[in-house]
Image (cartoon, rainbow, N blue to C red; front, side):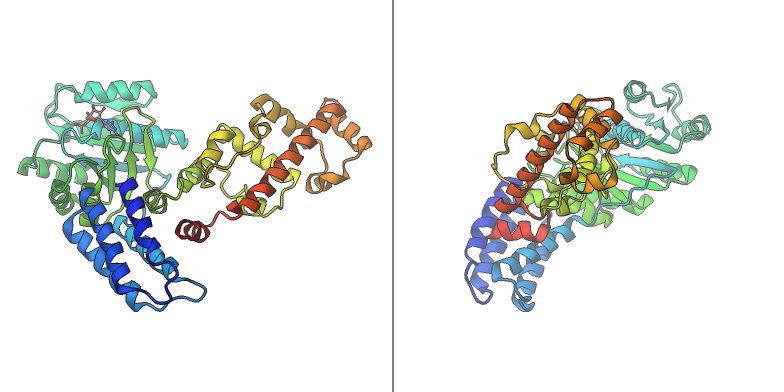
Length: 439
Ligand code: GDP
């Protein structure tokens, strides 16, 4: 869906270039391309028609905002309507909660239960899991093995066939955990007793969330499944699994529309780490081929540095040693600089190899050196003369040579960032990106 949509959108948008007013024929062609791409990705026909109608009407009726060309205007509307199609990301808080997992057999429910346990665990929360899938033989073994790997307690009893009894005992067994995830049974088709069981489990657990796990390849059936589960327990989040194995995923979007709940996570692989927090903006950015900005944001947040590293100010050329300190700290938590840079939408721009050439031990040294600098020096590195260098080195148990090297690195970073700015990467701003994409 991603590649073909991005390509056909670009072609259709080209036709709007240079027009003074919105051209009906060009909008129609754009909409037709969008429709083709979405339908081939299994998005429900009605959804596609609604989306087309909204894009067509808004493009033609809405007044062109000031300083916006026709192409930007239409692209913005397409973007907004696509975001609306996937809804906003479903709610997820780091607080004590009970999560009830729903879904058909084979959807990836058990694997995803363990992945979510891992997700909360990485966020520093105490997690417990209950296996209430009494239908599928081996479900408990599978789940308890996965949980054992990450040291998460998993309650279950393969000999008991009554899921309600297991959950009652399980709630006692894992009562000390902050996040409790209950894996329920799934079958090939929705049967009345399965629905009754999940209604009972929802009541028993007083679940804070009821998440529906949907296989990305499920297609149009997803809509019906989602509807039935939603009527029974009120689904408040959807998880799309196996996004690594299919170019589709449109069926799952139908499930989202059916429950009006938003996507919580995307599963994209078989290991316990292969779970991404869903973000509508990121999803659409990818859809439009605009670089994986959102994945970067997520990484930064994981490192809990989101509001401390002011990327924008930095890219504007305001870059002090203090910024570099924060950046080194963030990078330390985020991983190799090269990987981070590859996620930024800067195309094939080459950076000097030296920028990547700082090992984590060296980074740690730089931070220690910077710790012995004064606030003034951090804000204005040009103050650092040779006597200051000696003082800094002494304070950090190092040599003036080291300080000199650090300043050299700082200068290189500064220059590189200025260069990025010149090449058009100056502002991490969606609008700007979209302009570049459409222009
Ligand atoms: P359940 O019956 O719903 O509990 O399904 P399982 O959790 O047992 O998963 C069914 C199969 O799908 C297993 O082989 C999983 O490894 C696989 N699976 C689950 N999630 C993903 C995913 O995101 N990507 C891929 N490639 N495989 C997945």
